[in-house]
Image (cartoon, rainbow, N blue to C red; front, side):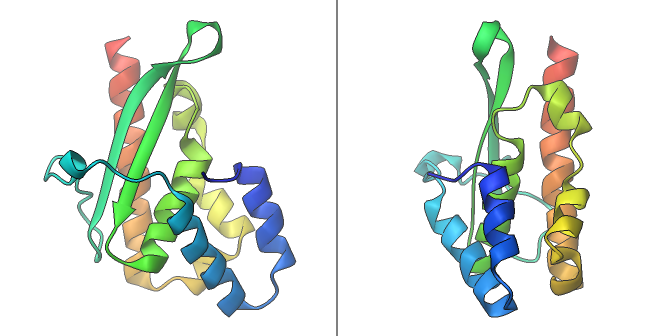
Length: 143
């Protein structure tokens, strides 16, 4: 199970060496809930990623009955899987409106990840965020 995003940020701040930070990202990827076999479909595949990435989202009733996003994902690359885990930790459990207002790039700046990701991985992260935001927007439109 993934730790809360605040704990992840605190852990990143404790790690000075980028090799350690990459290892932590890989570990986060290992902590994600498994994506069901049937979820590896073209509909769930995120376009714009150099690695293969799959994301699913669904709404679940939260406290007070407000719908909350539940995300799951996977990738065929270890570091990218960690980036998927980071985004899931950031967005999971948010209402669609809160997800739309969440700035993932601010998190990546805080963690200094923007400078340490290849342009291809940065583009992949943007594609994943756009996909999550599209799902949140669709949920808002449906309500």
